[in-house]
Length: 217
Image 1: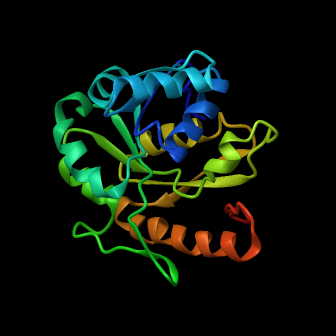
Image 2 (image 1 turned 30 degrees about the horizontal axis):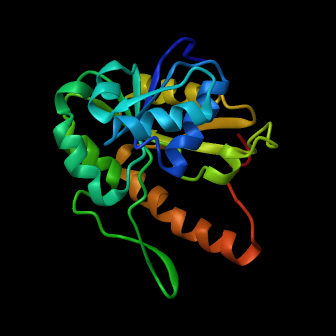
Image 3 (image 1 turned 120 degrees about the vertical axis):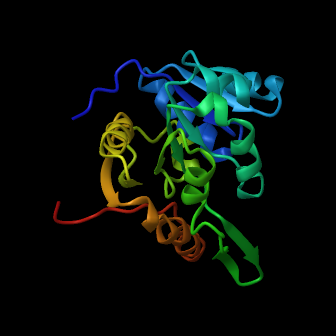
C-alpha cells in the first residue's frame, strides 16, 4: 500500500458539507488539512469548527500549499475555479469529487457535461495535474457525525495514472472503515458521478445515508 503519512490535504470548497466532512476525517487521521474557500474568513471559521489542527484560507492559497488537492465545489463554479488555479495545481494530484446534478420535483438527476464528466472537465483544464475521481458517494452527514467511528463503505477511485490512483486509494483508507477500490479509467467517471442521483433517491426513500460496498475483492 502506498505510504501517504504526513501528506497535507487541501480541500477547495472545504466549507461545504462534503468538503468539510472529508476535512474532518482527514484531520482526525492526523493529516495536515487546509480548508479553502472564496472567503478566507469562512475557511478559517470552518477549520476552527473542525479542530484537530485544520487551517483555512482562500482557495488559491491552500491549492498552492497542499500536497494533494480535493475539489469539492458546486458544479456550477467548477470549471471557472480550476481555470483560475492552473498554476497552483500544476504537478499535483487533484482529486475531483464533484457530482454534476440537477434537482426538480421528481428528485435528483445527472447533468450532461460537455467533456463527459466533471472529472474529465478537470483533466481538460488541468493539463499539468494528475486528476483522479473519488469520494463521490460518501455521506457528508456520516462524515460529520461524531458518533460514527467507522465509515462503512468503499470509495471508487478512477484515473489514468496508476501511481496517482494508488495514492488516493491509500488516502481513502486512512478513514476508519473505508476501503479504496480502483474503479477504472477517468473516461468512466460519468456513471460514477451520475450514480449519486440514484443514491440520493435511495436515501430519500429509506431515510438513510447509504454508501457502496463492492463484493468479491
